Length: 177
Image 1 (cartoon, rainbow, N blue to C red):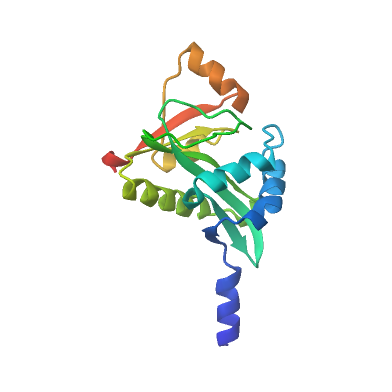
Image 2: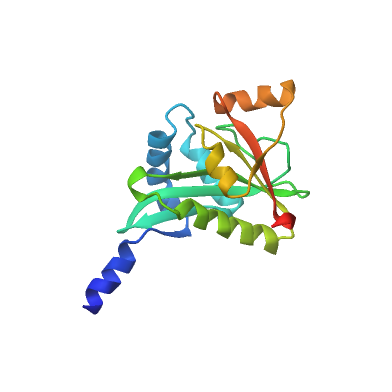
């Protein structure tokens, strides 16, 4: 009985720090979830190297079934899709959630757990906001997590264009929560 209970706990999806060995699985998940928003594995690897605390792998039954990538950044500045960051800005005022991607069979509360971890990182770093670009009509999901859309002028919308139709820049003020 104890063995079965432990096995059940092991099969439940859980977040752990992402490792270089997770890159093939992360790239495969990204390609499956975001076929219209391709990014090179080297871009993911750079994020993991620059800010490992924000990079997590979702594990179920010893398989990588999702990932989350986040890093300190500046509000209202959108990192280029499939672009290298080169460095984390010293004057970062938000943690930018670059991506949270989970295979369909493993969804159900795991994104909320990842965002809670990122919120803790932000608060521990004295950062009072989270930012992201919502894609694929996920805005309602992010709104449930406390993110709010930021009105975009023409120049800002042009920057969002690489993220696809309907992309929305969103912020979550941690001081208000």
